[in-house]
Length: 221
View 1 (cartoon, one colour):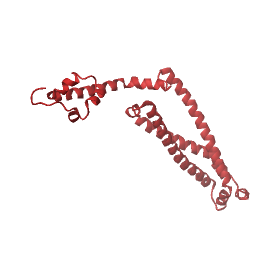
View 2 (cartoon, helix red, strand yellow; view 1 turned 180 degrees about the horizontal axis):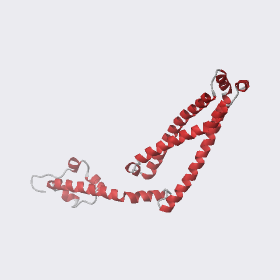
View 3 (cartoon, one colour; view 1 turned 60 degrees about the vertical axis):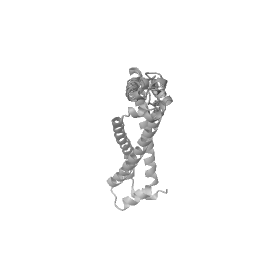
């Protein structure tokens, strides 16, 4: 080293030890001992490190889609056009079956609700409640139940989906997070959930409205 100039303090100059920098960056342009004995080259070395970090980030950004595709293939997620088309078809069938099961469950629960509230319905009709009022009462009740249930279901599904994707695809889930698609999916799911709940309550509400007050009052619940 030149007279009067000490050695380069890597920790003080760059915030990391030489060993840590060698793990983070590509091979140094000169030998580590040579650079340590050349503190006058610290500014040039700092620029080289910044350029190396930028190149590394750019390379990682360019190779991101290939790495994501490899992760998806290793997880069994379809990536080809034909595989994606087949997966969409299967998803539509599963979605239709799930909606059918949900509709039957809602219909059954609303029918049970009507059965358990025969006396209440009979009392309201004896007090002058019209058939339209009874139908509106059950439909509004199903509307609120569908809204709350759909919001809870969508929130839980979204959290589980994000957790699963984060564990499978590392940081790619945050770099390529489909915010707009998720917002539209949430709105669509909310409309479908509320609409399905109201549709499942139409027949039970009509049945409750058609009951005769005397028959409803005689039922023992």
